[in-house]
Image (cartoon, rainbow, N blue to C red):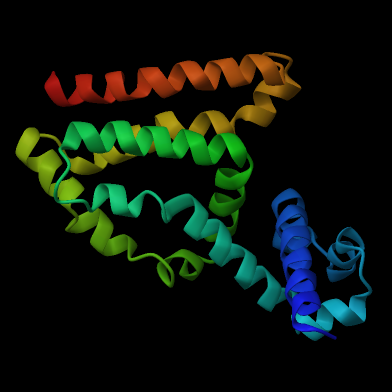
Length: 199
């Protein structure tokens, strides 16, 4: 088996695992489901990834880095203002979530079961306690607990994607309407967040 074949097979397994895990979660997924989705036999899947747990860990790493990896450089940048960080983070989150709408619900659900999945990959405590972002919020609005700012921003940005299945199932929005709704929010959220800071 050549190197190119090895790489493509492994990638095929990871892509299929990502799809199935995101749809069914860890407990609802069988390795047989992943093998079928990848178009390979179970023995070959087990050759590359010895257990469902190992495969899931790999998928979680990719998902967590996808959700947080592009945001961390924005919030830790010493050279940008707080207002610039709001614009950049909002734009980046909507870009990521529009392409991966099931990502927040999957990560929230799985992290609730096993918090170490995120803390082993992302220095959450440092980001939320000593980052440039926190310092800038405190300088801009000393009376505001920075966590109100962060939770408000994340809620406004992430919740529409978490709530999308509800909106769809209750016939409140079809896909096209939801996409337009998201585009509107991409413009509105930075305005709303800056209003909190300037009020």
